[in-house]
Each structure stands twice: as structure tokens, then as C-alpha cells.
Length: 456
Image (cartoon, rainbow, N blue to C red):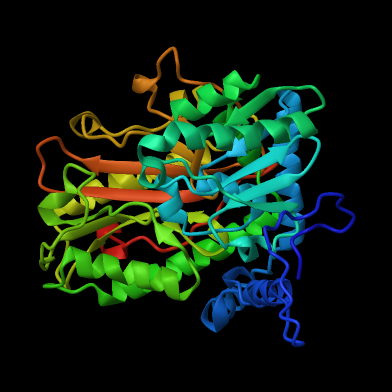
């Protein structure tokens, strides 16, 4: 197995010392290569997601995405954006952006705050992945990584007061790539970089530009295969939500209930959950209470936001509110729930290709006056490998620096509602995931609302 695409002119960079014992034993080079090939063949991306997830996807009738085609599509999107902005390439540190460019992963949460893995994508040239020590095998499945080099990690954890010295060594390697493949263009996009790194690149003649803009625009329009992968991630998320709801009972703590969602995600090959947004009873108002040791009581509302990074690295960002126990909901609980459900329904209906962001916001349903002060921070936001561009606020929150745009087919947005009265006892959170199509929209999420709270 190799990560070098067929016909590529870019070879992998390996620091391997030739060794021959002279007694007929395999050389160190051969042992390293065999070890790498074994590890690559057992990579989680190669092994797949397991019988449980595959059976659920088959039952849902969702075909497997063509992953090589998806990877080529993503790389084409990045390079088209680089060309449009007249950039020589992009240097990526955000692990979600590296996943988009290479479809490879390595300790995703750890590298998000310990910058020990980065990737260079040339506009005309190779994809060079700088990976953690002895991790070359982690991208051999991808088919889009041309070369793997050891990362020069210059965070203080590794460099201490010698950080400036290591930064210079790192910058020399990046500048060499830009000179070799930029065709005289020294304009480099970077998504996340500490100031000493940016300054070192500038001293070597590069100009630094906004890599977040490159990647967010590249990620905006999903391919057919990306939508298949997202559908599968949502099926896995909703199966885990079903297990979570089945476990809900009075006396269970919020933390114990939240753990069911984590478990359900992990056993289906999902990756992580970005927040801890689950609360019950009086902790549901105001919103944004992270889950706690509080025992859930009979008659409580339980509200949560999945923020789940599932199979294929896709985000399933859904919210639901349930009633705990067997008793009937109060009139107040039903009123709050109906307002939230109606807002979601009305605002979903407005989502269609060709509508501007501003027009969508101006026409959207908003919470009633006694709930407006506690409103959710946005009406809509993009979603893909994580929450993505654009983010659309309520019309009252639109300012001169809020960007406008147009909804396009292939964009996926989440539509949000939080309804709780200012100073009230409880609140309701609902969120759906919506694909913009050529003729309107399609709701990708399908987990049922709580019929008792709907009053049905």
C-alpha cells in the first residue's frame, strides 16, 4: 500500500539508515518498510467502521462513498481556491483542515492544541505532510499525500527557551517548498500560526495570507460522496441518540446520560464530541450549561446538542429536548416546545438555492419577545467536517461586518432554535441538519421530536 498517487513525480522523504548485518538477516531498511506496510494495512481508515455501523447503513439504504473520488474532489477544491487567490500554496495546522486535504488523522484533539503535525498543499505541486515522529504509515491509505516528512515542532513544550532556533529550522523547510513549487510566487496561505513562525517566514521572503478563508471556501460545497459520508455519520449519531434516550430515567446523572452518546459514537467508528452541551430541568435555562453530576428528575426537560464528529470525520450537529419520566408535560413545557418546533419548521422552509444570507435572516422566524433575550446566538450555520462557514445571526444581530453571500446547492446548514423565557425555569433546544439542493432543501436529520411535548 502506498500513499503516492499513480503517476506522481514526488517521492516520499524517509530518514532511514541503511543497515546490513552481514548474516543474511533483513536490513534495517527492509524491517522499517515491512513495519510501515503492516501498520498501514491495519490503519483504522483501512479497517473501516465495523459490522454494527455497516448494518445500520445498509438498513438505511445509504451506499458507501467513493473515498478516492472524495479525496481528489477536496484537493481540487483547495487548489482552485488557491489559484483564485493567486497563492503558491497553503500551510495547514488545524487538524480538521489537514483531514480535509489528506483524509488522514493523528491524535486529532491533541494536535489541535499541540502543533506537531502540519501539511503543505502546493497550488502546482505536491502535498507534503509533516507528521509526528514515526507516523508515516498514517497517511499511506489516502492516495493524495505525495511525501511524508518528520514535523519540526517548535512549541515551548519541546523547544523551551530555544524555540527561536527551532523556528528558523522549521521556516527554512517551508520556504524551500514554496520556492521549489511556487513558480516564483511567494504568497503562502496559513490557517493557524504563532507570530514567531509568521515572522520567520516573512524574513525568508514569503508573504502570509489567510488560510482559513481558503479552506472554509473550499469546504463549503460538498460532493456527492461527501454527502453520502455525512448521511452515514448522521445515521450513526441518531442510533447513538436512540441508545441515549433508551437509557434516560429519573435518577440518572447528566454525565451518565451524556456518556451514552459518546459510547454510541465510538463503537460506530466516530471520533469525538466537540462540546458537553447537555442539561436538565432548571439547568436548561439559560442555555450553554455543560453537563454535570446533577441527577435528572422525573418531569424534567433534558436538552442537548450533539456536536458530534462521527464516521468519516463528518459532523452530525443535532439538538433535541426530551421529557424525563412517564408523567404528562406541563403546559409551559409544551408551549416552549411548540414555539421551538414551529421556528425550526418555518426557517427550514426558507432555505433554498439562490437566497442571500441577508434575505434569509430578514425573513426568518424569531423567538417571541419574552424569549428573545435568551435566543440562540445564530439562526443558521454551515456544517461539514465541523461547524463551518457561514454563520448567520438573527436580523437584530446583523452588523456592518457580517458577511453576506448566497446559498448554493451542495451547502449544508444547521438550523437552530433555543426557546426559554428570560428568568424562566426551563428551555428547549432543537436543531436540524439541512442540505441545500437545486430545487429547495433536504432534511438530512430524521430523529423524531418528543411527541408528548408536541402535544400530539
